[in-house]
Length: 407
Image 1: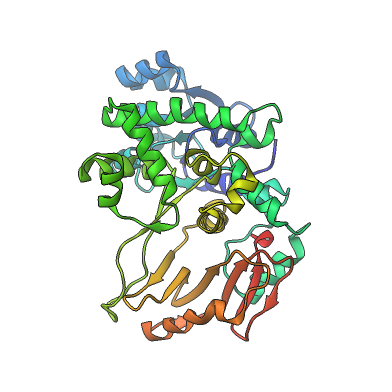
Image 2: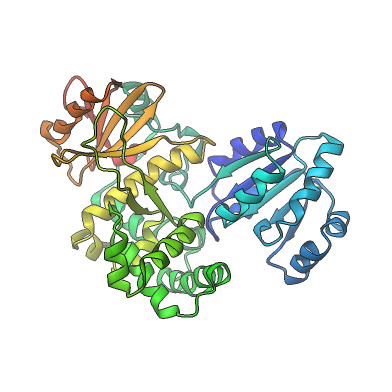
């Protein structure tokens, strides 16, 4: 088992909140992490067990009598009826760490959580393994900012530099523990099974989808657009479904922690900014499987090479926040003059610009658009160009080239 960055966040949150909800896609290790953090005597029950699910739905009070806290309840989204009864127990006992919950459908969970457990629950987002976790440095990770302080710390902790081949192998394999930790697991067989079982089953339950072929085409269409502006009409035309269906299906993928919509940065100062989000797959292995790249080498040489690398870099930044229990205020910039910045991180009243480049020797022009942020009425912090270099190097007084291995 690999240590996870979230371990310390979970232990800290459990001391402060009576309920902890760990959300994320299926099969990323949520239960394994909670069990590794659990003290002796904490029980476990999963609502994937149909008998337990039926009891929790039919008689939640009896279910909680049979499964008393401290307890881990897995896939709690199947029985939202439990939340009101959990609230009663929490308010009566007033103890921290009573209920550790997991769920893989955050949207539906949040509707019930906000109604019943507001102020009593710590909500933590989780993805698959980060690059740092796989490199056995899970607790050296701090939320990414392209500051000289962050770069100095990352330089100390980063181990062997990553080659282009290493990076694309990581991208192609993805972040699911079953693929990365079990040498006998076939990567293609895992993702094929994942799509057929978890994705189609969960989506079918939520949206009553009867046309599996259309949904598979939809998944491939979304995967092929990772790193691009979201265009509902183009997707609808490609898949031969209507605009409303695209929105509904995409909403489920987002709620399941499989895709991320990166919002454009805009304020009231400029009306020239685009307001369309960009879409990113949150696991590059699943994305490359759906787009049918047979090897890391073919992926690196193919048409998606730049977009999938950008996706990988952005997701590693997101993990650095989520796996530390923090919220990333992350955007992109594009205006009607075609000036574009891949990523903007907002911290307080400061904007930190970041570019993603598939090069080992970025030029000073890689950050030429950063100056446009001066017109937005906020402070502009130190910038970064994340790239394939082996070591960091200044590109100017305000911008550094940052190796991908530092993330």
